Each structure stands twice: as structure tokens, then as C-alpha cells.
Image 1 (tube, rainbow over the protein chains, first blue to last red):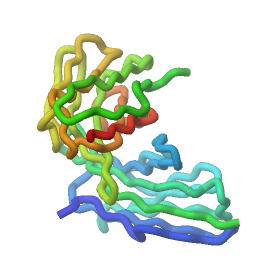
Image 2 (cartoon, rainbow over the protein chains, first blue to last red):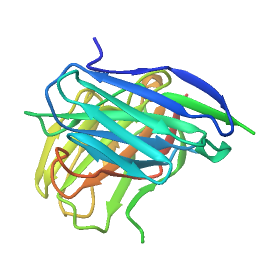
Image 3 (tube, rainbow over the protein chains, first blue to last red):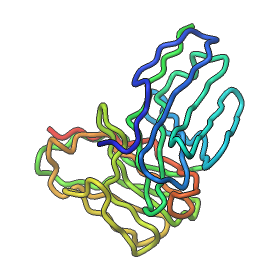
Length: 109
Length: 114
């Protein structure tokens, strides 16, 4: 059983649309991370959050600790947002991450 | 800004050959780790290190060795390559163990074992 799940697995949107990617986790966590992996493979960290909401440009990440759920929102989506978005949980006891399988986003012009 | 540097980016090996994937970081991070990424699966931890001289196994350590003789370097050795080790490998680092720290990834190494 995967301890971190994401939905949807694949998502295609038109430029300008509002996008939501969901992450659910079963472990008790100390922090949840959102990562972006572009075609070509490089992975960058977008957000690290343990409560509430964070915003960076057109990206917003929220987390509900009680419901063990996090969302990544992209406003006014653009083709350059096309990537795989990965959520990763770091649990309360371990020293490592548990990664979700990723959501592949394609934004069409 | 170099960050986390992985080499080589692409490699083809024959079954039974050995090789080393190099990873270096210039941020003085204590924590370093190696992951493999396979189609349809999340990143899986192979080995990690919380400081020079300290290494430990992750979720999928079989067939791989690591060492951490310096803070900067964390090489991953494939002892006798098998087709099941065909994958994309990522090295990552963070200031200390992940909880509460941003993690920085290398660009990835594409390995094919034939």
C-alpha cells in the first residue's frame, strides 16, 4: 500500500485554466513537500509546508493535517507549467521521504 | 551555483559490469541520498547518509553500495549490474535529515543495463 497517493495521475488543461492536484497520505508527517519534475528529468522543490497555506507566484499549496490531505493549485496555467508534480511526506519518526507517484500535467496553448 | 552534481548523465552497461554514479554537492549539506525512479512508481530510496562516515539502507538497497568519506561526495556503486537496475537515478541533499528541510536534487542519471 502506497503511503502517499496523488490524483489525478494525468491531467490535460487548456492554457489559462485553474488546476488542482491532490495528495493524500497515511503516515503522520512533520512536513509535506511539493516537487516539480520537468521533461528532461530535473526535480526542483516548490513548497515545504506543515500547516496552512503557502503561495509563490501562480502556485498555491495547502495542507489539512487533520484530513491528511494537501493540494497544489496553479492559477492561470501556462504551457511552461507542463511537468510532473510530486508530493513527498517526511514522517514524524524517520529521516527520509515517502514519495507519491506523481501527477503528469500537460497545459495546451 | 553548482548545487548537486551527478555524473554521468547517461550510461549503458552490460549485465555483470560494475560502475559508480558520482554525486557531489557544494552546499555543505549533512544529508545526502540516492533514489531510483521507475515508470509509474514514485521515487524510491536506495541509500542515504546523515553525515560523513555514516550511511544506511533505504527501501531498495540490494545490488548497490555507498560510502561517504567526505561531506561533499556520495557515490553509488553498482556491483554487478542487472537489467532490473535499468532506471533513472537521482542524488539529493538537504542541510540535515529531510523533516523540515528543503531537498535539492541532481539532474538525474539515465542507466540502461543490457
